[in-house]
Image (tube, rainbow, N blue to C red; front, side, top):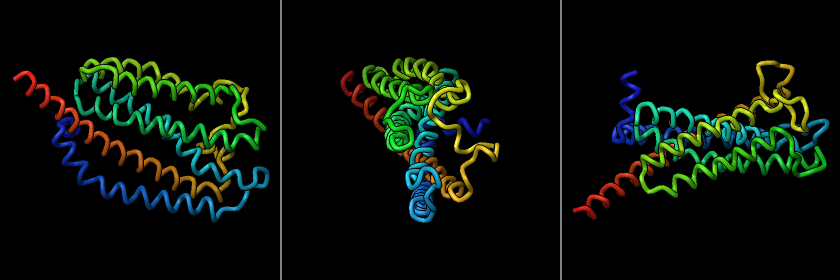
Length: 243
């Protein structure tokens, strides 16, 4: 555990992520390109949904990352509250715009997929509604960070907001299980083979998900580095003003 907390040191974090970023970025591009090209161009149309089903390669990974980005922010916020490590707070801040973007992609692709399937672009389905609320929490989280000048105070308040918003992150994932009503289908990937998508769609979907995960990690690393440097710059400017 002692070695893990070494990365709470900003310099150690930047030095380590600088080495990892090129490799993670290359892997992200490769898996995304292979997964999306395979899925969109080399899989058949579904017997019921036709070519529309291929939006699964964007919708499912982005929805998965939208939820897990918030959960990552929750873990980072808890570390900040308990250990007061600034890198964790800045990592949570860095992840928020990425998670919000993933949520938008999931909502838009879900609407495009839902219109021909359900006959409507939007329905106040439990999962869709909780997902929309999650997006609003993302916007609130980003706005709260921007509205407060003191970074430590902003980190404290956004950590509390993150705890509350986690309820909707969980609901977004399990709403179909909690409520047996609604238009949204169950999970596309499951430990139960009966619930999984067909094998012909399954493997490119896994690659697309891997690509989105690697892309998220790369962007979080990059944005966290930027946040650390911005914090240093603000601290230097403050010292100059005081002197």
